[in-house]
Image (cartoon, rainbow over all chains, first blue to last red; front, side):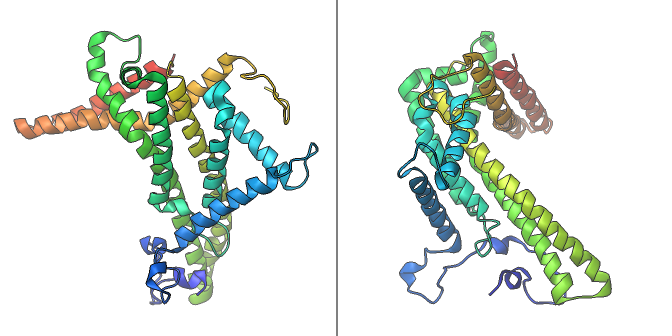
Length: 269
Length: 82
């Protein structure tokens, strides 16, 4: 049951582009006991990503040496990256307190995303929107809690809906936009941004590799071979591009999480 | 800004609070724009759609979307643009 066979669906005479069905994964063990039905490939990938994140942090910082070696080096570079590019710029002097959460979020999302290009796994878990939603809701709940804790319930809505320095009548027009944007659309765009990037990336990769497989292996013809070669080359190019996008989206997701936390702690801008 | 490599406790927020807040403001603005624009179009497009529905007109829905778009851009500009 290799990936190309799954991709080149149907086995008909016509080339068929991969569609939504490539995201449908039934139980990992269809013949296994029914209490194991929840275990699908995306679930397995999420669990593996969490495990890898824990192992990575544990191995890197279990017994830190003054002169770092091996995996501690990677851990420290990762830590510095999250701290100096995300935590401190977004949250300020309180940023270091949030490093545990931000470091874990960044690497968890990164590993989930990168599983899209890791052979055999080959599915970025956030291409199922549920996983992106759970992460976004976690950040959202933290943001709401911190906002109310640091600004008060009234203060929170006041800071959100009435940015200072506008004539009073204008607030009547603008406050609904602020409310909808901050309370409803923010977590929505937070989740969808991650989901849509992973979804589209996976679809593109599947498309080009299906083209290559179909025109070079299944239906090799003189005319079609050129198309197959293009598909093959594009698969390589898009794989590199996807690694870039997957890393970038992990960064952006964490950056926004930090930005929301920072906004909740220091509302005055 | 050259930052020292792996630090012990270096005093933060380091190189000027100004840089920190302007960086934050820029990032916030850049990533808030989609939700503000969606929000503006939804609120005033929705209002226009409702009015269309009640008054039996058809022009208020697109007008509402445009008005909401303009207001959202104004709001982003006011919050982060200066």
